[in-house]
Image (cartoon, rainbow, N blue to C red; front, side):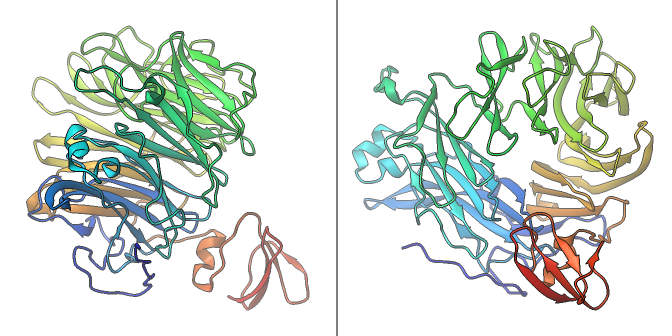
Length: 539
């Protein structure tokens, strides 16, 4: 029986985990030590933010496990929860899965459920462990499984998750949360030693809906496609969602309800081009705040030639950027790559950041669009950093962007000086593309697997540091959106987090006489939450 972990709110000492907190200057803080452990220890970290402003971090390590008396490689997935102050909440990281797998070559998923719990997907060798001949016959042994773990460390969907051991070669797993539902997606290919399919029914892309209580929608996962198409999901209105897909006609999007009924009748082709590489999350997506979404992706135009395609899909299936989208850099030159996307729902604008490696320069580029497809910067985009290729052998590295305030933006990129010598550059821009401030973070570092979050008060970075001289392991960093390191919180969850009050939606404030207030006042307040519950708090 897998142990239940107890939540610790104060400081503690633990092997492998530091009693960290968010940085107070430009130096990132290490929360997990990988010194002397190599590239396969605390590798491939992921991070998600919770509604109560905590941070789940997951990672994997390569170790070993005894299977029928023989030690075999074992890739294990771990979880840690940081509170709002950046302090780890478990004395030891939670080990999610413990099954032998001969290689870490797989992709796993991490999301946060509506109740703040972590949802983790894995692909491991559980189907091959009972008998060694089978384990040797299928050395990869990638069986898909999904777990839900709450903020107290309880495994809500069983100690060994919801698993499908009949699928033995499903190395790519992912998940998406829509309301209280989680959609578990994986791709399986089953072949014998000759390379022929063993069971055609088990080949393709599969989807399962898991309800909040761990019950599943279908007795067996739904066969979505007989190809490897890596669908991606963005929540729409109510319990509906947009599912981004590929087809022979180009890139398509469906709007589906939780039973996978087509709301538009047929999927919408939003670009005649499609992504054709092997990145797990190849379409960069952002909700438009009205049930639609913005999408950007890299179009391969031959060896070392790419451009960036951008489109806006409304909730009714209409297209804001024409029938086949737009190029982010509206030019005949084609060497633009590694794009990201963000939306400001207040100004109804879409920002795309991407890299340019044209003949003479390396550039970090921005392009901004209205929801109707108007280019809001120069039609070729706005270059915010550049290097002369003749004198610089190293380019930049895109991280991402996010909206702040009514019409401003945070942009993050990496300035690569040489091998193992990188810095993060964080900047704030106004609506016209004027730079308001710049900060340089982590000089001479070697970051990989970067997660970032741009929120109303602050911007967060989580990544793995590889360089031994820079304390390798998982690092965290936070900067206030005014460029300082002193974060002041303003919303209701932050104002009352120490009082045990979390808002599930709109909140009303009253004084002791029952008079409605615009905001909490000094002294005793009565708070009515969206679910109808009432609390008294002293501010």
